[in-house]
Structure formats: structure tokens, C-alpha cells
Length: 285
Image (cartoon, rainbow, N blue to C red):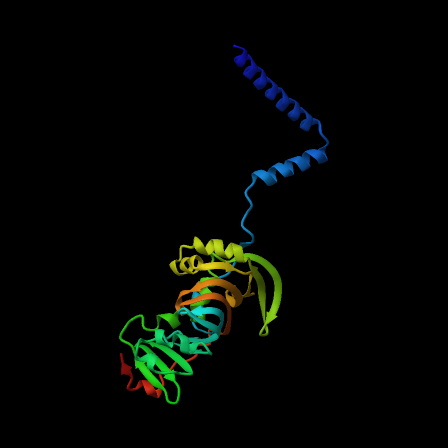
């Protein structure tokens, strides 16, 4: 019985203390009340993800484009130490024609991934991938150009993933581009809006992205630094991007630190794409 009375007394005391506290708060100065309410809101409200969705349009709406991408890496490719860069230049027009030219010190490390064992026999200084209505052609430029028409549908998949267009779409899609507007600037004579994409927000959003490639990219990352995004002030589409990441990058079979720098050098220019003479009689593999 004494135990029951003790518990009951404790409960009554707690109710009285709560009542007195509420009365004290209600009679406190407005400044103190506002400060306490702000503190309560800070504790009770979940912290929003840093940055707001960046308003931009996808480059899919462009009829044609010219673009470049530079990828700098420091880590391992296929388990072997690799440090250097790759450069890819894209030309795409409205006639279902495109060309990707890849150069750079790391080209030899990935050339075996393009076109299979036949391509790996060469040590080109540049690899050109042509996609035309007639099919896909890979041209290896060295002492003399060699044109290969691969039979496998995914023969050029590794370098296709490094196309400036594909990378830009993945890194600036509406479900992952989160950040703040820095202001308007001039880039190559055009007015652009400069945004900073929050690295942590990008990484969290990429891991939840509905796009399978973006999600796979996010899942393979260990960290993402803040990135700079430049958006055409009139068209609303991305025209330049640069950011750095740590993790794995599947197209290169790379693991380590890498930075990506992309720029659209021509928009709706409709540059023609023509197969070189070496592809008149290509090697079929």
C-alpha cells in the first residue's frame, strides 16, 4: 500500500512540475519565449538536405551538340596503379550520327575494353567511335588508321559511358542536382548561371535515384565533393560542369579519386559526321 501511495505521489509531483513550467514559460518575456520556441523547433524539426533542387532542362532537348569531357584519375585501373587523364570529344547531329574521339595517357589502359581482343592488339594514340545508321565503327589511329566494325552490340560500351553527353546527363539530372545559386557570370561570351552542387546532397540523392545508371554511380562512390555547374541563362540547360569524386568508376574499371570536367562547345550546330576512308572495308570482329 505504501508503495502504491509513493508512486501516486510521484506522479502528482511530476504533473505539478510540468504545470508550473508551462505557467513560467507563458509569463516569460517574449524574447525568452521566442528563443525557447526556436530551440524546440531546432530540436524537433529534421535537418533538411543542403541545397535546393537546381532548375535546369535536360540536354535531350538539343537537336545537336559538340562537347568535351576530361577525366583525371589517381588510383587503380584493373588493379594496376594509374594516374593521368582521358579526353573525349563528342559530335552529335540530328541525322542520328555521332562521333566520340578519345585521347590521353590512359587510353592504353582501357583500349582492350573497346572492341575485344582484336582491338587490344593495337596501341592507338586516339580511338574514334562512329555511330551512324549503318552501325557502329571503331577507328584506331596510330601509324595508320584501322577501322573495326564490331559484331557485339556492346563493344564500345565502356567509351560510350564516357561520352560528355551521357556523363553530363547523369551528373546534372533533376533528381540529383541540389545546391545554391552563386550568381550570373560570363562563360565563352555567354551569360550563364553559376550553381554549386552540394556533394553530400548529390551523393545521398544519387543513391536513391530512379535512373539505374545514376544509382549505380552513386552506390559505387565513397565521397563526392561540391561541384560547379553552369547553366545557360536563356535556354536553362547545363553548359559546363566540374567536380571530383572518390570511389569506383565502372566504365574505366577504376578505383580511387577522379575529377570530371565537361563543357558544351557547340549547341544546335548540326556538325556533319562522316566515316573515314578506312571504314570503306572495315575489319569485322
